[in-house]
Amino acid sequence: MNTQSILKDASIAFLESYLNNASPTGYESEGQKLWMNYLKPYVDTFITDTYGTAVGVINPDAPYKVVIEGHADEISWYVNYITDDGLVYVIRNGGSDHLIAPSKRVNIHTKKGIVKGVFGWPAIHTRLRDKEETPKLSNIFIDLGCESKEQVLEMGVHVGCVITYPDEFMILNENKFVCRAIDNRMGGFMIAEVARLLNENKKTLPFGLYIVNSVQEEIGLRGAEMIAQTIKPNIAIITDVCHDTTTPMIDKKVEGDLKMGKGPVIAYAPAVQNKLRDLIVETAEENEIPFQRHATSRATGTDTDAFAYSNGGVASALISLPLRYMHTTVEMVHKEDVENVIQLIYESLLKIENNETFSYFK
Image (cartoon, rainbow, N blue to C red; front, side):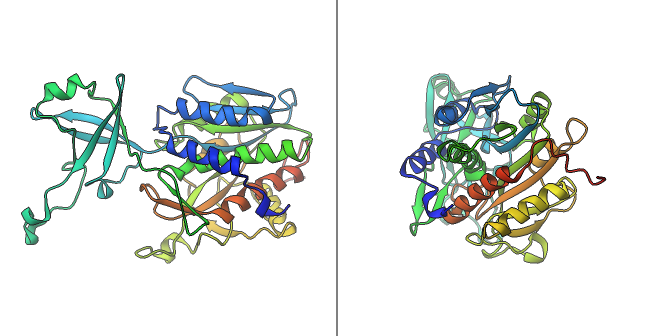
């Protein structure tokens, strides 16, 4: 398959609408509807669960089940405290970065709709240079242009409202995708593209394929934990993002040596089943798909861990997309890496044999 042909104009249009839509942890359903609508022509049926994980299924009656998975949620903030003069203090919903907050515009999601606000910050003129405070959770605040707590409440904003950034999709230098929430709606996009390619290339799989878009990864892999128990798969191939470590202030001796544009990243970790990973590596080599390797120590920190340790043990592997500036509003990935992750998952599925156990003891 020529990777140049993978992403169509319709694919990019969907990606843009999907990334621009807000899907904060715990509130993923509107994004899931967009995703399911795009996926619908390529699957036989859908499964959804109580907390909003969505699964497109091909061959739902097959006893042997293979999962390909990404997660749907993006980091965000919660309204935590409203001052008498109408300023809003926040707590995290996922790993939101306090350092990037000052002067950012925000959307506060209320029953009355979106309320606009800004993270305020003292002017440079007013900050004492020898005692300059840095942004932290205790001193960042949102200004809605209100003069009292009553005005804030009248707008529909209350403790517990979720807050996202409005920053939208753009393409830099023709081949770099930039947006907030590429971690990890790009994963949901890539597995949907795998389903599209299977359909368009008229591939028939000997097993059931479960295209899983999990919720609540950013606060502890919770959606994957739930849906793993529902599906009870035999195999799970997870896709998420990892760090491009070539930008300033990152220590490669700690974070590894990974660069966007050099291909998908195949993980080495206790949760990664060695024989399944070897199949993926062989697939990359046979199809001349460039790839990188990453050792993740005790845990991958992704939904791989949730699937691997479910149901008495599920053969699981992780294919990551190198990303710059994780958990900021300018997350950046390389178009060719996106295409190569899609191709690697697609070709790996075609290589998996029905009823394969991946046992170390046969």
